[in-house]
Amino acid sequence: MDSLLFRTLSEEELHSAARHYFDDELCGWELLRGGLFNTTYRLDMERGSVILRLGPVHREVLLPYERGLMASEPVIQNCMLERGIPTSKTVLLDLDRTFLDRDVAAVEPIRGASMTSLELEPAQERSICRKAGALTRAIHSISAYDLQGALQRPFGRTSLVLADKGSASWKAAMLDELLQWAEMAEAVSLFPEELFSGCIRCFEELSPGFEDITEPRLVHGDIWYGNLLVHNGELRAIIDDDRSFFGDPDFDLMLPWMPAEAFMEGYGVPLDMSDRAVLRRKLYRFLLLLEDSYILKVEYRDREGYLRSLEEVRTHLMELSNDI
Image (cartoon, rainbow, N blue to C red; front, side, top):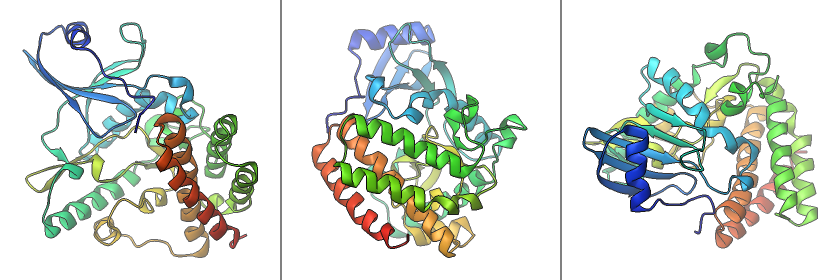
């Protein structure tokens, strides 16, 4: 993939960043692999180490909710850490874009490695997934009202809620995100017109089930092996909280990247299998597919991934049409 958002720094820029942000001299550095949105380095300096995260370049192509992710992350981190949920801790945040023309954050290093880079025994893997499930339930115990009190628009992406641009209901938040995607997708001719119109119509007609969600619960939104840090076979942290939102916890429970049995065992509450709940989860998966299609084609310039996603969209649209 050739991410339009990812851009490395030169050796000179890295040394300058260490002096500017930390008043320290750089001893060594490592470009951390795995992300295509932010560009991430480990900086080892004379007085310590940090993980330096550089926000995307070419911000004009970002989906609207992606444009304020770094600003919201420290708030969510603090809320999680106060409740004993291990995650990253931001030690620097620069959104001025004066020294580098991109958002910049730094977090404390956490001892461990991403699960995607490890070879684990099946029993270890199941144990880690159970712990991830238990921590996810703890995340879901956090309400938007725990952050800022009597919010009038507490639903939606955390970056929007904190900027007082959230929605008054979960249904409104979901439809707003859909329409924001549609505006960006239409501008780049993401889908043929018939498919595009069918996606919008199907999502809108099946949306009444969103009205069942009345409590804006914190949802991580990006729980997968890449965001689980493990050391000595133990889960040390769930990281990358920037895509979080306040709404339906079921969104985290339908993500396709976790072994469902072990994860749900740790979560400790069975999935709601009522017709409306099952349909909501289908729509969350559908919205992810729509957004992934845009991200793969425009942001990451991954044509093969985009074409695969396009076929998945067609398949899911046919399945959802049967529910109308």
